[in-house]
Amino acid sequence: MFDTDRDGTGLGTAGTVLLVVAVLLVIGVSVVVAGFTTDLLGVPEVTAVDNEFAGVTESITVVDSGVTVRNPNPVTVAVDSVDLRHTVFANGVRMGWGSREAVSLPVGNSTVEIGTDLRNDRFTDWWMRHVERGERTNLTVVASVTSATFDTLYSRTVLTRTVRTDALAAVETDRRIPVEADTALVSGPVLYVERTRARWASVSQNRTVVAVNATLSNPTAFEIPLQSVGFDVAMNDVAIANGSTVDATTIPAGSTANLTVRVVVDNGKLDAWWPTHLERNQTTRVRIDPRVRVDLSRYGRGTRTVTPAPINRTVETDFFADEGTFGAV
Image 1 (cartoon, rainbow, N blue to C red):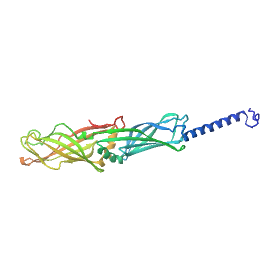
Image 2 (cartoon, one colour; image 1 turned 135 degrees about the vertical axis):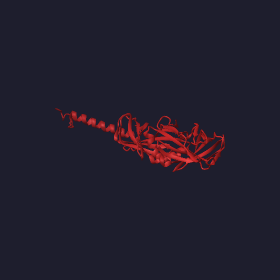
Image 3 (cartoon, rainbow, N blue to C red; image 1 turned 90 degrees about the vertical axis):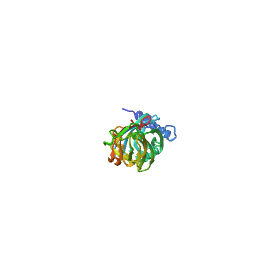
Image 4 (cartoon, one colour; image 1 turned 180 degrees about the horizontal axis):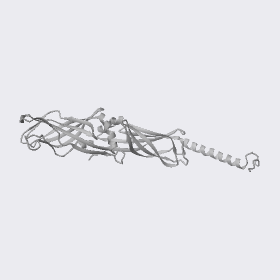
């Protein structure tokens, strides 16, 4: 069928065609390798990352990351050539990372799905820096492309975002809260909590202290000896904080008084709260139960601990939005 001896090489037409194809393939591969090693061709680079929370356990928070990679070369980069790595930092704390090995990159843009595991035990380190910086977090995502074949590494910051929060708003209120002593001494409330204001007092590895200033008024015609004012705080039914005033005071008839309540947040409880926040689509229901202890002994009524109506707030976040927010509703 084929003439194998006309050119004297023993290859014939078909053999010559195969030889030419083989030579061209070798030349093509050599050009691609030479292009990478001499920077004539481009190294694949990460151009964008799309993150969303995918699940949470007691130890890790899973983030699904769609990493967009641009291959500027005219050929697909081989499967065994490229590894991708995705790392999340919050205020400099390395929260977690994920990777995909042996990725094949077609020409142009392609999206590679990577599962990133954020470590919940690093939540406290982040929280400390967040509070110290006035409830502000610099969220940074770094993606890298590693090519073992061509001995190259490309790394860049693909996301930088400032997440600001206002967690203190959850314990502040201007709603007038009546304090009913349930006594025949007066027909109405013995006190009113007029308003509360809060500020961060200190933060450490184990606890965060919030100073809550409470303004109370005495609507009665006689002075009210006040032993203490306290608050219990729960977030999504996880008890995370409590505290009370230290010194007793007396509020004269028709007067007001300002008291500072030292509320202590157990940072160890934040790890238990965080999964509930994500499971509810980044939403937290905050419940604050006030406690007021009054001494009515001089009026023959004894000492009573009164629990006024709770303060309820909703806290919502969106950490991977265009602008991270955290506020009370």
